[in-house]
Image 1: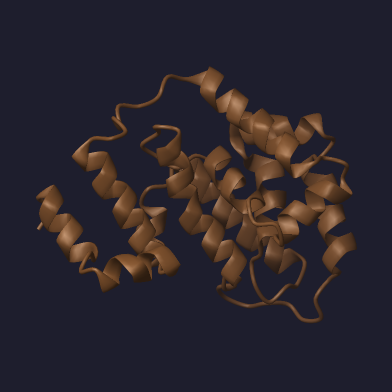
Image 2: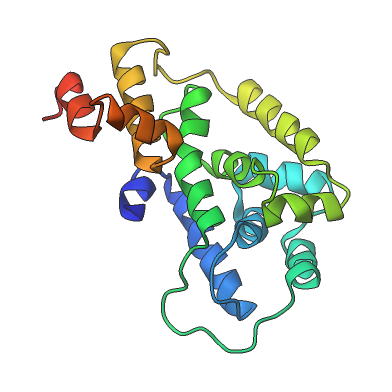
Length: 198
């Protein structure tokens, strides 16, 4: 499931995810959380995400120190793959809908940041608040930069293809809306048939 989500990520965004795993390992945490995504974005989040975090004084080093202060260090070194927490997994999955809402056809680091700081209980959001960077302000700054930076890609909101892609993104999250759609016979196979992919 996660491999499918990462297919839509740019190479740079995949690099952020890899960096987040390295940060979790470095802090000896047993899972990758939204806080590790925030640290990785501060280090390597591309022009927009890194600039917005930097404007609020969150360099990679400061973000790492902030996470250690909030969460602490783990007890043991983690060997091998470090799993994603449910919140981090949700952020990875929500990055694609964030990109689609902006009319973008690939997930860039900025979209991942928007997704990581959206939930009220995300540790990344708590980290921003602790650093004196109000999450709604950070989100607004990032959205402004994204809208100024480039024209929307031709996702053509309202087109059957864009609607089908939005439905697939919702169904992949397995949330309440996905359950509601499935109860009414709308599943991934039905949407793919509609799009002509099956």
